Amino acid sequence: MTTTEHELAISATGLRKAYGDKNVLDGIDIQVPAGTVFSLLGPNGAGKTTVVSILSTLISADGGAARISGHDLTAEAQAVRAAIGVTGQFSAVDGLITGEENMLLMADLHHLSKR
Image (cartoon, rainbow, N blue to C red; front, side, top):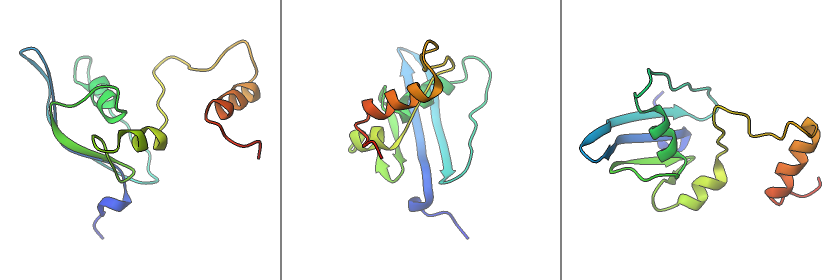
């Protein structure tokens, strides 16, 4: 059975990014089926952070196309942001409050109901 675009959490084809004359991504392809765990591994300078920054709409690609949860990265950036959660290598939680309080804070920031 082949994975259709609707079954993919992440679909990227030919992602490219350069900073000046330095190519940091040169045609990256990624397909991640929905409901799976995916790791992006590589040495320092391999472009991992750049890929994540592009896929989370923090920076734009110079070329290629991507879809996140079926949403076009460029045309539907707001829908992409609503469908994802991203955290960096350092904890994004407040260490001075409890885990439950952190969860309630995040729920409040996302305007979730009490339920």
